[in-house]
Image 1 (cartoon, rainbow, N blue to C red):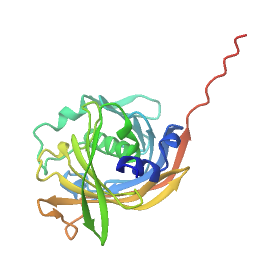
Image 2: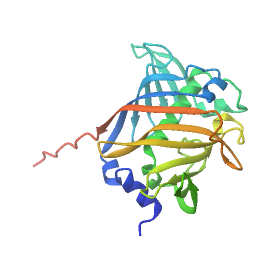
Image 3: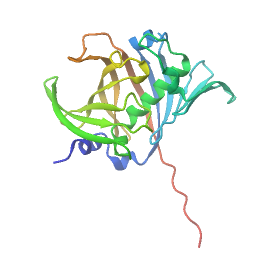
Length: 253
């Protein structure tokens, strides 16, 4: 019998296919109650993201203006104009969230950091869990929606920008991701930032299966607050996979 991580990898397209991909290009719309609390009620609508598959590197177009592009790496975020000039930037962006509570407003560079690392994680799950430094362990099953979901406890290495260092992922009998439980560290309050993130509309793109509709709600010790407001609503569309560049042949004789 397969272990849970292996089942999840196979259900989402397989590790060998994942290793053939360099990047994703997709359209994203994202908003919800978290954006309103952070003073950014418009969220992002029909922006284009290019996301590296194996490294947390993201661009968002447009961002911060119709003719501007946002760029993300774990250690720097910045916005460029059409000529490639840097309009604004921030080094060590995660440190800028220090002292935040749920209602602390975000500026555009903080929004850029949050959206970029989150989307990179979502597209890399569950494949990134095979990388060095990750620890995974199956824990007790969970009953929801008349189904038994199998739970995987994941501990992230410090090198990975993510919501929090320890998360629980729920997979159905077919190995497809149904739910993620985490706390959003950059929100600043572990209780207020506790979320259950549900995944819908699993769709294959070039052999990789991606949940294209996601809803995050608050979570209490009693469980997910499904009847409460939606903290984050995320829709992905027009997903294209960019293959690895072919290796150059060695013409030496």
